[in-house]
Image (cartoon, rainbow, N blue to C red; front, side, top):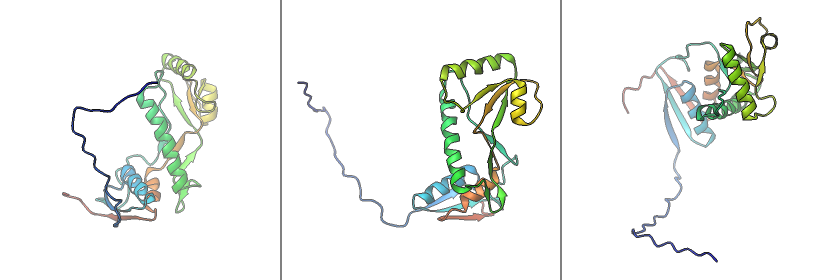
Length: 198
């Protein structure tokens, strides 16, 4: 048999964990953009009351584009950034389905999943993507390499080159997503409040 004995040369100090906090669980979140709204909604789902302060008069006022595309990054070496974007897209899709299950909030569009086309800038990029897809053994329907005709057909426009088709890619209206997140029970939003110091 194999036996071991724990006998460190340093003095052990065992501290029992403190009792669970029984008081009111409140948090202050500064900023009502995507990060602040998502943080507040996550806290509220865990039983916290989140007070969100934003200097602008409406959530996500700093969003420069009316909508954005949500799809992961493809990398031949499946680098940390590629894995992180896959998780981020999965968590983002879960959040969107939770706060706007039918793709709308208060009558406004929030998200639409109708696929995303990603164009290759040149033939070398297309070849790298082909190699990456083959090497990574991604699940069917996750991403597809398409020639210009097929990619254009799926995207609904004529294209000069091929690229990737992300079937589960989404178009997301950032400001509407923030409003939906901030409407969660347990989240209180105050706009027009500039935070100078804590």
